[in-house]
Image (cartoon, rainbow, N blue to C red; front, side, top):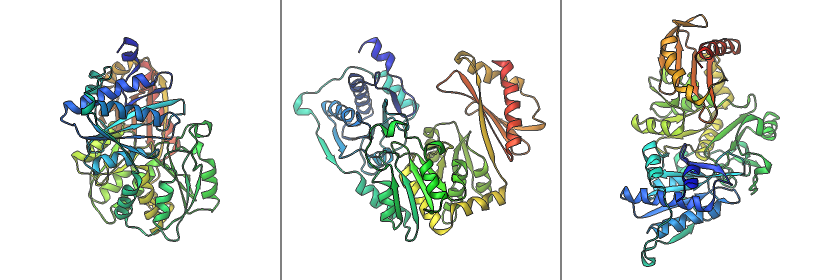
Length: 462
C-alpha cells in the first residue's frame, strides 16, 4: 500500500466515503483486507453479509469486497439486488453472522460511494473498531485456494418483511400513503411493506436510476416537492420518503407538509409509550420537546454527541425504548440499534391509522408549547475549534440573551441550558472550517436572539 492510498482512505461515521476518483477498486480491496483482518483478530471467521445500494458502481464494489473476504476464508452472503442498509444490518444481527458491510454513499450525490461496516449486533461501528480497521490497512492477502470461502446470493428482504409485519402488528386498511423512493434502495421495499400491511400506496421515483435523477437522494423538504404537493393536496393521508440507502426517513403530513423530525421523534415516542415503557435517547442538537414527553411519562432522556453511533450506544447502555436525531435517523432498541427508515415508516403508518400525526403533534404543542429551532455558522479555522470551545467555559456569562444560565453540557461542543427551558449549542463542523451555533426556543424571534447572542460569544474567541 503506497502513501497515496493511505492518505486517501479516512474513516468517518460507520466507514469510508469519497468521490469516485478517490473511492477506487484497489482502495476498496485495501479496506476489505483491513476489515477481514480486524474481524479475524476479533475471533470472527464465519460468514459476513456484503450489501450495496442503487449506485451504478455499488454492485461491483460489493463483489470486490466479497472476493477479499472469501480469499481470507470467510463465507459471504450477497443480496440479489440493492438493499436498504438497515435490512443488511438486521440480517447480520438476526442470523448471527460475523458482521455486515454495505457499499453506499447514503444521501450523497451519485459521484460518491462508500463502505459502511457494521458489527454483528447490527449497530453502527464505534471508534475502537474504526481505529483498528485504520491500523490494519494493507494490500489484499489470500489463503490457499482450498481454504477460500464461498459466496451465496439470496434475497434479504423477505425475512425482514415478515419480521416487520409481526413486530408492528398493525392493519393499515383504509390508510392512503404516498411514498417517494428517491430512486434509492427503499423502492419496492418500504412501499411493498406498507401495502402488505393493508395501506393503499402510491409510489413515486420508484424505479432504478443510479444517478438519482441528477440530484442527491436526501430526504429534505426542498427535495420532495411532489410528495408534499400530493399529501397537502389531499391525495394521501401521509407521505414518506427514504434516503438513498433507506436508513433515514422523512414524513409529510396534510397540515404541516414536511414534518420537523424533532416533532416526529416526540410524537412517535409518545405513541410508543401508549403501550410500552422505556427511556429515549437523543443527540445534543435534537429538540428537548421529547424531554417533556419523557417527563410526563416518568421516563428518562439520555443526551449524546451528534452521530447515530452515540445514540445506538446509549440505547444499549440504558436499554432505551427509542432513539433518534434531528437529521431523520430513528431506531427501536428491541428491533435494531441502528437507523431504520423502513421499519419507522411502518410504525409511523400504524400510529397514523389510529390518530393522525398532525393531531398528535397538535396535542404535543398544546401540552408543552411550540418549539422553534435554527442554526447559523461562524467561520473558524480548524486549529481554533478546540481552543474556542475551551475558552467558552471561562468566558461564559451568568446569563445569555437576558436569561440566567441553568447548566452546561460538553458532551459534544458547548451547550448552554437557560432557566426558561431554551438552549444554545456551539459545536465544530466536522467537514468545514466553521463553528455551528444552534438555538431552540418557543418562538422564532427568540431563536434569533439566542443565535445573535451565540455569535457574540463565539466571534471574539475565534
